[in-house]
Image (cartoon, rainbow, N blue to C red; front, side):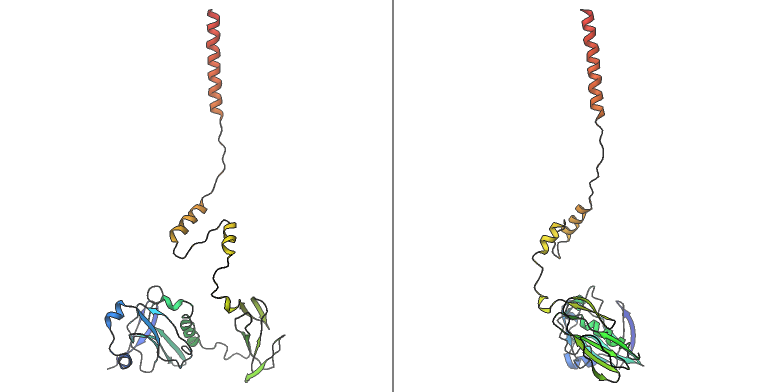
Length: 273
């Protein structure tokens, strides 16, 4: 029997029904593993915009107990068969349900490099193309040095831009590309895009000169787990030296009084003699 319900858990809205379909694919769910063990994210349906060519390596430590609707598409699950990503249509709109937390406890790995595409693609799919009804627009994708930047233009007229050759790909829609020669933010026909360093530099690590630059400015480098050292360094840098005046009149006054009294004593002795 299917039972439909909805709820809010960890800030994520989802709707659910019976999960008997999962038992056919994964077998009975191991409740002990699901509650206490580490589970892997499994892409169940790769024939979708969100999961196409996506191979995440994301350990999960918890999930919300749900069951997909009969009309929904289950795209990703845990290794124990529990739904993690479900999508469906609601009227003219789209709904994407991520049935784990926001990354603060269970699904922090989904926020890391290589896995975050699952979240960004889900948002993009749910939002759709906000420019689809516009009469004209221009979109330039971010890129890297030595890699072309893709440019898409919707216009009634054939667009033109310096260094870009446009080809018609659809009605009133043109596509082109340009090869940037320097990093930073650049602009083409009013559209701004970012150019990052070459992809082969991604895993080279820190610049050897960085530590010297940091030290020369009074800074210090720390590891990601050096929390106590970071706090101590911040406290030491928070201290300020205040220059003040300290008057030394009292010792001289006391010395003068002692000399004066000694002089009076000596004079009296001389007079008595």
